[in-house]
Image 1 (spheres, rainbow, N blue to C red):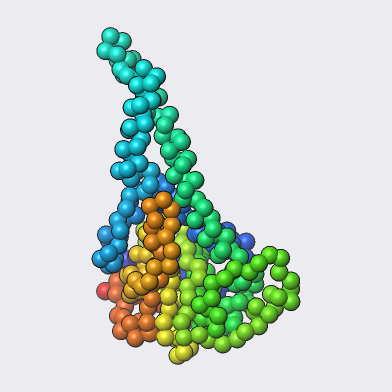
Image 2 (cartoon, helix red, strand yellow):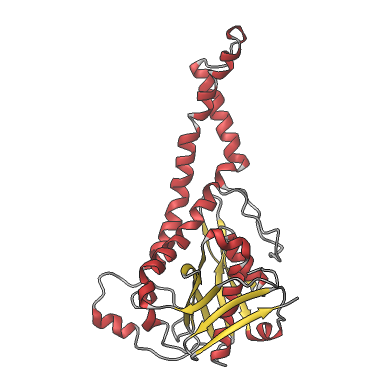
Length: 311
């Protein structure tokens, strides 16, 4: 979080508490549905302000794609010709107004069609994430390994973000839990203890109003540092990144993550979702840069840590 030297931003990162469950579930769902807005109408999902992969595809949102605009103009022209709504100079200024409905009307079904194509991929991913075992009992799930953690970012006692790092033995598994699930089955899922060599960032979200302050980078670096410092067994941290969540992808690249294999494509324009990874040796080699100030409450070690970065 960028700030000047005379004023510290009053924010804190703390572990998840059961009282946070309702807000956390809402934010997790919000994070999973956010790509739909970017895919449809949030302008260009470009990666130009950070160290993006050279083969990243800079694609405009589907509503404003050149092909979409060409189809819209063509259909509108045909509709205006069929309805005989082309401007008539003899009617003066009002003659040019009559053609506007011919261009507005076809836009609605085109937008509906694009959303209809984009939505299933996003909703399928959201449903899968919301049915993962970690959300059945968040506290129990993320206590199975010392390197795991579910962290909440607060600003003025208000939750504005979260991040979850899973370093348990089954961290690389990504299967949802079928419904219904008995209490015995849940306990079995949460029984395994231990630490895997690869930790996975399962959830990562910051409210949009706070993203310009680069708080995502602070939260990400804290969570990654906590995972690496807790257990030497953790050799790598990975997370999913997509141009449909540009602020997350920006934070991953700025924190030293590198783009790896493609996991899936989404929507009518087939946006890629890829794994991004950060190895322990890369993390150890990183130097602190920029001006940061964040107050961190670490209940695991019963300490309060104040971290300040200076240029």
